[in-house]
Length: 185
Image (cartoon, rainbow, N blue to C red; front, side, top):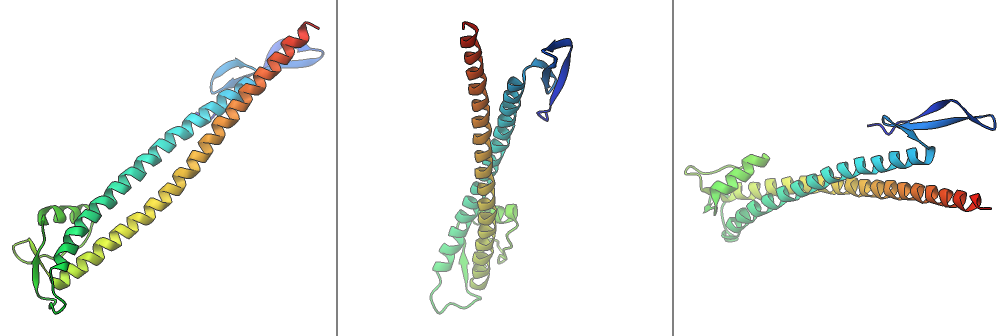
């Protein structure tokens, strides 16, 4: 649907020497110009509405991803907090819900180094894991901000499209009312 408005001359008809035209909007013929513009405007608004819905889903999915990364980071940070100020980089700590943390890291491409056994990490690797999770969250947050700006832009476009269509309907109604009121005079 391209909201294409094409004029079609009405064969054999003219009013005071002016050829009469009807308009076709996306294959629907027999419309006057205001009606054609109104249909095109509403179709544009609906199309933008569909895009807006898709962007809203992307924003929600990206936020869910950030939430998951944040939860995994919380388990890593808890293990980091278990070390004293004098901890060596080779000291180890157990990561709670290590299998889940691993699955989140694998799901989102966060690099982790585990000790043999799979539920412990060294202090140095925990610090690296924290940095890696924070980087992944920052990256996703930047994308989220971009998506939210795009979503806001689409919302504005949608609102403008509906506003324009409503104005055209109002103008068409005003013109019809004016014509009807002038018929009686």
